[in-house]
Length: 174
View 1 (cartoon, rainbow, N blue to C red):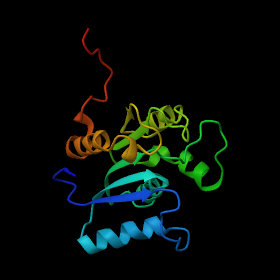
View 2 (view 1 turned 180 degrees about the vertical axis):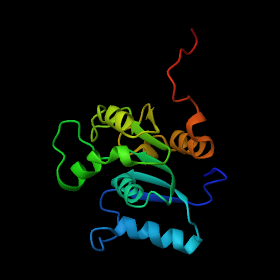
View 3 (view 1 turned 90 degrees about the horizontal axis):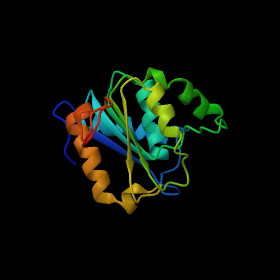
View 4 (view 1 turned 45 degrees about the vertical axis):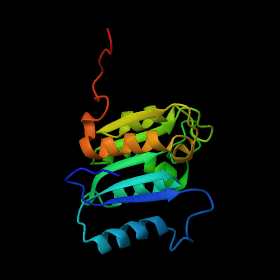
């Protein structure tokens, strides 16, 4: 996966159900990030989290803003527009405005696990946030549309806010 020159290391947290290693003090993904970046000798790095791994990546970016260079959340499950967030999810939702790095949040257009309204919550609350929907993909975008996901994430890591479509509103093909 191509990365921006400023993001020499990209840590990918795949939170696929039942495939994550056992929790260590409730922060296994956080510790994997720390161990991975320590091994690579990276001070700043990009974080790409998938599903529950996106929640861990978000949690890590909030706890360590000085280290997260860019954040990509793929099918994140933390934010529930229905208002049923509690505990850790409610705290993360309340702290979205504290995310300091450029952020891309990706949803599958046919996702049945995450309500589409979650996109507007991320976009409104994270200061430098872009939203993308991958068509013909459900919650597991990496399985449904792997090349589309790789292209999207690679482009964002390389170009940040100038990826595919800019953050500003505009008219395409007037």
